[in-house]
Each structure stands twice: as C-alpha cells, then as structure tokens.
Length: 450
Image (tube, rainbow, N blue to C red; front, side, top):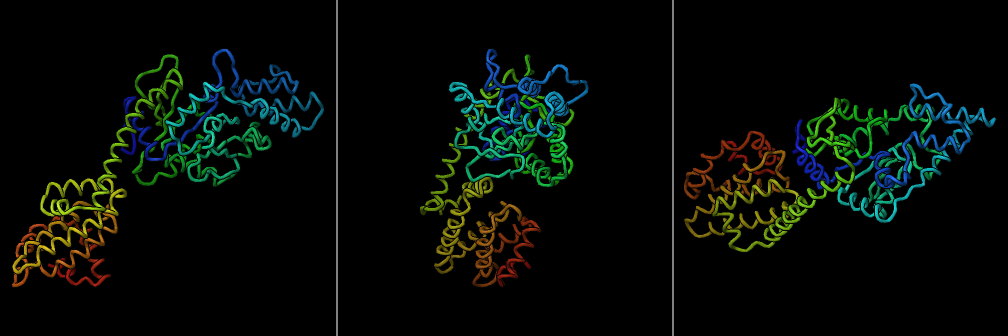
C-alpha cells in the first residue's frame, strides 16, 4: 500500500511508518520539541523554545527583552529588533550586533543529553531507522543520539551523505558555525532568495519519502513551501512506494484516532514522544520478525533455485500448482530471485528436451510450451524481468519449430498453442515480435503470425 487511507487507524499508521523504514525512504522532520523531549525533565529545562532562546540572548547582550515591541511580530522580526536595541544601547553597528546574537545562540544551544535519557532516545532512533533527517534546530542533539551514524549538514550544503550515514540537514544552521545561523528577519529574506536547489530538493525529498514530523509544528514558511511544492508542483504519477506526511503531535489528552488537517497531513496524537516511540517499537518488532522469516524463506528458495535437484525440476514441469506458486512468488520478489530463477528455467527447459529425445516422444515439446506460456502470462511487459523475457523468448523460438499438426511435430503442443495464444497480452506479443525481429528468431515469428 503506497499511501494511507483517508481515515486510517493508529495501528495502520504505525505499520505504515514501519513499512517505510523497511523500504528505506522514511525521513524525519525534527523541531525544537524533540530536543526538549530529550533534554528537559520538568525540573531542569535545558532546551529552550525560540522565544526563550531570544530572551536568554537579550540578557547576555544586556538588552531589556520586555521593552521590545513584539505585537504582531514573528520571532525572526523580534530577533532583528533585539539587534537594533543592542546597537542603540551599546553604540555598535547593526551587523556586529547580529553577529554577536548568533554567537550567543551558538553558545546557549550547547546541549547534550544525559547518559540515561540519551541511551533511550538513541534506541528510539535506531528502531525508527530514518534515511534522512531535516531539522530547524541549531543544536547537535540528533547527532549525539546517532553517534557514528550521522553527518551534520548546514543550509549551504547538499542533502547528501556517504553510504550507511544519515544526513542531518540543519535548515537554519548549526551552532558550530555561527555565521551560517539563520535567525533574524534579514537572514530569512536571504534564505528565500531564488535558490533552486534548496526548494526542489526539499520538495522532492518530501514527495519521495514518508516524512515524519517530530517535535515540529509546521510554522516555518520554508517548510510549508516545500510541502506545497511536493503536493502541487511535483504531482507526477501515483507513487509505487510508501509516501506521505505524518505529524506526531503532543497533546495532554490525545485522541486515539488519527485525523487529517486542512493540508491533508495525517496527525497522530500522543501524550509524549516516548509514548509514540514505545508504541511504534512494539509494531516494528513484529514487522522485523516477519521480515526476517520472509527473508530466510527467500534465501532458502534462492538456494534451491541455484542448486535444484531433479525432483524440483520435475515438479516445476509436471505440477501446475507448484509451478504457479513459484511464479507467483517470483512476481512478488523478482529482485531477490531472478538470478537463480533464470538458470533454473534453463535447466527445466533442457529437461523437457531430454524427455523429447526418444522416438515419438513429442509430449516434452508440449510441456516446454506450457511452461513458457505460464511464465509469459504471469507477468506484464513492464513487470517481467528483462533477463527472464530474453530467456523465455529464446526457448520459445527453439520449441516453435516443433509446434504443428504435421509429421514430425507435436500435435499436443499445437493444441496448447491454439487454446492459449489468446491469453498473451497484446503488449507482450508486440514485445516478443520485437525480440524475434532483432535476434532473427524465425521460429518465434512464425508462431506469433499463426
């Protein structure tokens, strides 16, 4: 299921997040609420909200924060006014006050989780297995929790990282590089200059992923723009992979049923991030157990296909039910099984030819044709693995010379062809004709003409 229904249950949402983690396209959009959940315990309020951060900076800059006009102003504008007041109070250029503010922000966000709580949230993120993280936070709390598995990136960096390393893209800058911190109104104006890479990358990343909002309230215009682009600019075809935007919203009395906001974002309420993660891990454990068993079964099947015994080959040729089940499994997991299956088919086809060697033993040709037609009708042109289609085409050309109702040909194969040729999709027939033309498969061309 590539997308969630309009009104899913909580269990369905948690299973969908787990499925995205398994697929490898689960991303986290993390805000200040996440850092507060990791660092604050109700007694020691280490992590600060944006307003608290600006108020603390004002004290450091010796500016009366209460005297700043905040009516109708957002935090970037308040930050600019704080710098203006600092310049007036201390007789320094405005740019110098801005730089000083950014240095104070960097100093005040020197946050690191304690050992016990850090281990708990590190475990949470390990179970979540995000492929990427985008954050509006200046701190390095996420990197502390993902020790050795994350790469911090600033607003001027590309959202990219080495294999096996999670990119953590700090949309508003990183405290270790104060000059890049985005906090004042002027910073936001420059942030919204035409920057094709940032806007397109954010929008496409959201569209191509299941995006989980953690401790984030969707108040950033830059993010809202990316969400709008992902929904309206890059519409494209319906996704074949799990995708969507899910917000984990803290509530004192959380509702048990997920719901959607006016933008279509799915909201899942929880009384804390810990509650969400604990419930998610229970779902994830079951999913991983199932995936592990499934992978073990696929590995065993792949081994059988790579090293088939005579009974397996005979069963595939003679047992329609066994053959159907194997082809159905292959259609569900072509990437895992196709390599061994192609060599297995070669062995099965060779066995039908062995059966046809004795004089008058024409049934082997019919068995050959039945196997090939079952393969071609189990897939569509756009889903059949190319290597399998090539192998099947070659085998069909080879047996075509023995399909007929004249002397020396298999009448049973002719009856099978007459009965089943209409089951081949027109697109498949067209593709077989293309292959026959390219490789000069005259037997296949003649069979298709009939």
